[in-house]
Image (cartoon, rainbow, N blue to C red; front, top):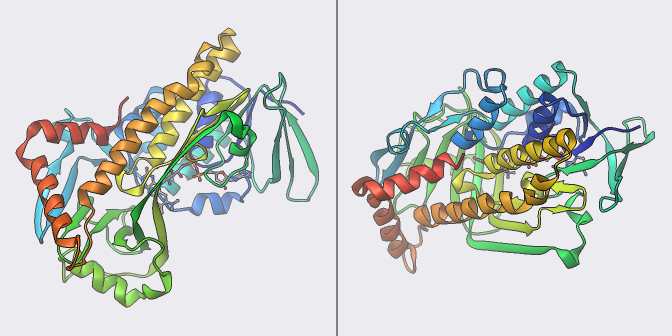
Length: 389
Ligand code: RFL
């Protein structure tokens, strides 16, 4: 069996590549390890930045994918219980992003692709890439009945996330890997509780916490914690008590907690993002710390660059853009890597009263204060939030 492009992974990256290729009339097959139900349930990000929104609008997918997704023009910083609203719309001339839970976007990307005649093979096991540096790569996998298959292709898009198999196909001797870990952990909670009026970041002596909406009846919270913190120590009762203290809101409504995790504030980048006829897209090539809200948006930006480059190569026989794929994406990746670290630094402060806590809290206050006193600082921040189109 043969196709033009095999896409490995049906996350935001892979599904965006496939939808964009499909609209350009380029044949592709998506291979996904998990079931459709599982892929459509994974709740992660929630903010689509302006640059990512433009990708869908330009390709005519905007109505289908983004209907009902509200604009997210305001961001609340709550310093010592005092709210301050940052107006991203104002400082970017209306280029604010939109709120859309990642799993809703994924669900819509899947149904749009399938309705348009695209193909996703879910529950594909043992996906393996072969001859990616030759003229004609192929991908092997097993279907849910255990039957082995082989797909020949001109190109492979490795969109299989940080733990996927694609990245390992780039020989280590040509790959530079950049890693950085902060001495901070993020304990994150997903709850069926009312979302905040605006995305909220809170600074006070009890430590940092953030509250983001994930649709009409769902919230994601982040609480700064020691790296590798013990999940078992975060009982539901402690979660709500800490959130009320840190968000300085005694009346914060609770609700059933549906997920808890400790995530590293990990930064990771590989260079180059391509090898032969294999192209890495999204988390397969880079991870940014969560506080910048850029992981999903970078995946969409990469997907757009790759879909255009593949279209030029397949339709017009021009592979110049494919050669530029990795450097083009990496410029944005490093820009957002720097923004995400800066954002983490901006709000980072412990509850520790004896050492760095009080000092860092003053820095956090000062950085936030600058956003409200210097229009140049506000503009720089809002522009990074919007992303570069
Ligand atoms: P995904 O979403 O991980 O999708 C990869 C897909 O590949 C499949 N796969 C395989 N398929 C076949 N064969 C294999 N061997 C395979 N191995 C893996 C997987 O099953 C999956 O379907 O990567 P993608 O598409 O690159 O998208 C990246 C985003 O998901 C990620 O960057 C964001 O979720 C990060 N992130 C956030 N980003 C934001 O922009 N804003 C946020 O607010 C935000 N919050 C978050 C986040 C990530 C979180 N996690 C993962 C801890 C909050 C959390 C909790």
